[in-house]
Length: 102
Image (tube, rainbow, N blue to C red; front, side):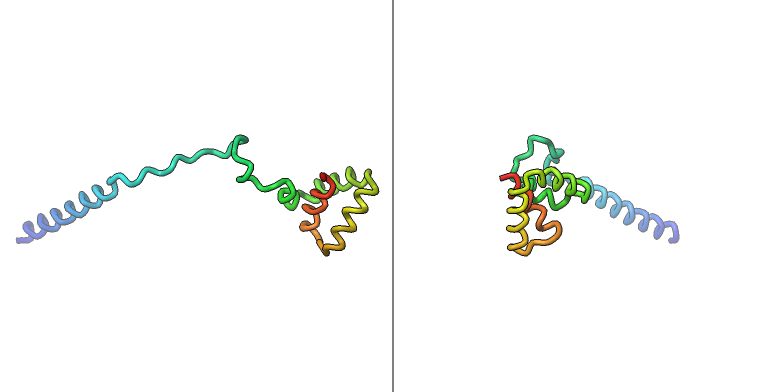
């Protein structure tokens, strides 16, 4: 009798194992092909240059400020506009970048 119960238990376990394997192997919807980001990605997927400026390091920002400060009149005007808008920190960086590039 003990042998019979062992065989039944083994049969049940085998049935579960086989059905679990069959379920695990059923083809699911194939995953969408993942493409690596490339230089040919549409511009709408990339943040604007002004938005990217907010992620610059302080060193990059200081270098840009030194370059822009050479145009004293425009730099002063852009800084005044930034202060009038009460922009501070990195939020002002994107505004100043756009202002100086226009």
